Length: 379
Image 1 (spheres, helix red, strand yellow):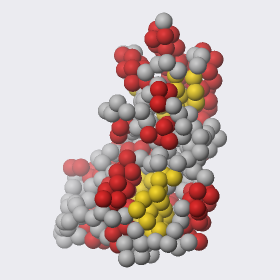
Image 2 (tube, rainbow, N blue to C red; image 1 turned 120 degrees about the vertical axis):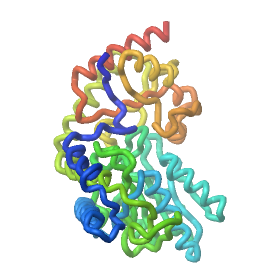
Image 3 (tube, helix red, strand yellow; image 1 turned 30 degrees about the vertical axis):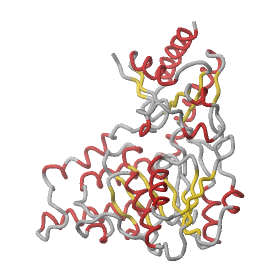
Image 4 (cartoon, one colour; image 1 turned 90 degrees about the horizontal axis):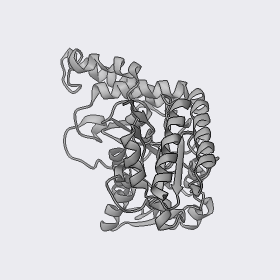
């Protein structure tokens, strides 16, 4: 049975061009970058070459790029690192109620350690109101953390406007850009972003590699003990093949962004139109304009979303009922609840996220089986 994959917000397949670049660093150029002999020095140089590549694509300096194991670690390093290093200035942090668990749970940990966190709720379309950000700034606000694009409903936040506000009030601004990288062009200087998180496997790179951009003027502390890698800010032997793969994948994604977005958005719009035509009683969640091109989050009245995922899997279709990091939970999506979706409808949601490998034929197969399963469950 052919597998048809529609869960690109969870992860993406490694691009073959990326894999080819990585292979030599597994078994030929395998030296530890911290070693002082030539095999190690070569890989240290390779890391810095790829660090510079990534910095160029974000419009920042190479020394502002730190390699981690994933987007979640990058979020932890940035948010905790900034909080602990700046607590003498204040202990108030502003974030949103629809962040990824990597941000929400990091903030909850900080609350247990004496920090105060304000969780802004978005409007019904999933977009944060700029005025809510301004209203909640107080004396002692040291950090604003707002995700660039949501992993469940795909909504894109007004990042540049929030960056201007943060700069005006001399507050550090972080964005979790895990879902946005590869889908949106990001210029950290133009957007006044002080810190940014990304994860390679979301843009056709390898799993197990993350990137943290942190402006050189930002004061932040290391949060784990160990060696002195990554300018003494992130301990652990660097993942050289992963770093090479990340820079290569980001370069390909950046070069192809307009072409891919145009193609994927057409598929997404076709999918939604077909579902609207063939399946009654549905709700599209999130804003349809300020949204990632491949994201469709749909609630089916009277249908269990988890059950839909399981039935579709039986016919070779991979979709999600929410965040991959929360897939094992039985609670309804915190994102959908935050934008006012009723509890029972939040449990009936399906997240379809398309990628550059999907086709019209794939969409037709998905809709055909989705229609059959919904009709069966309602009969």
